[in-house]
Length: 345
Image (cartoon, rainbow, N blue to C red; front, side):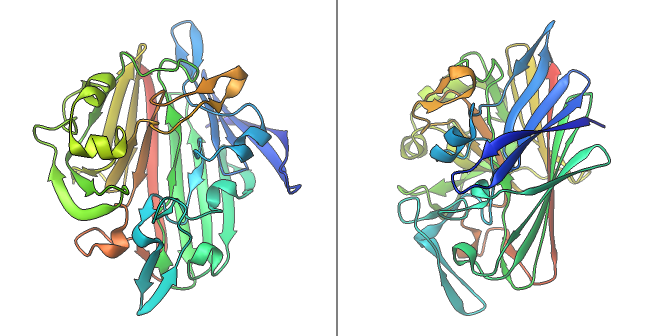
């Protein structure tokens, strides 16, 4: 297991103390903030050197000023809820519309802005947070526990658990932006993506799922064999136009012999990043709306300078009976695991 080191990272604008935890395992290291549960860096061996492959900010003030969810834990409900409302048990729940007509990533003040409680537990970092009943319009108190684990063979695991005292919605993910050439590289050139999915969930002009599953066959979304990011992004397709690039939920193929399915593999710069998950969906996002966001070491992050692999329940599931449910019943346990493995190629 990893060695954990804590250091202060400053105070938020409303005077909440934030800590920075470093998990060190062999030549691999991950930094996690208590603010937003943010994965600030993921440093991996690249030949004789090491390379930080996760985009992040230099200061806490920069994190508070940006709205791109850099590295953050996202909840209560990741992705979009169409119309910024939902009905559950015969009651309508209005939400904040913070993304056109949609509620995105839990609302105006989601888990990405929370200061999480943190502790070391058997070589892992355990973060906990309590979302009170009615926060951002969602019913029920939600108790959340997220555990970061790093091993010396390059596996960073994020384990999500939650429980509510009322029927509610729950869909948690991590919104890290990766670039295998290094966080400050500024381009995805030469990096290839493979996703184990036969379909995507179609979206409308507001990036809201329509309820239709689209086959990837013969489209830029057919990533069942490795495809260069730039080649895929250069192709023409109405869904790519609507998303300004890849910003879509991939319907992951079932792999019944293991609870953890291999969702995606990205190669480039002598590295291979594999994403495993117990979730049924993967939001592939090519950082289409980064706009010069200030980064570590004076870097500036522009559009399509990274990719996100957001493991998730299918977005807007509450409005589509044909989608796997994102309802968490009172007293039941929410649990899923995602692992990122980085190796040399």
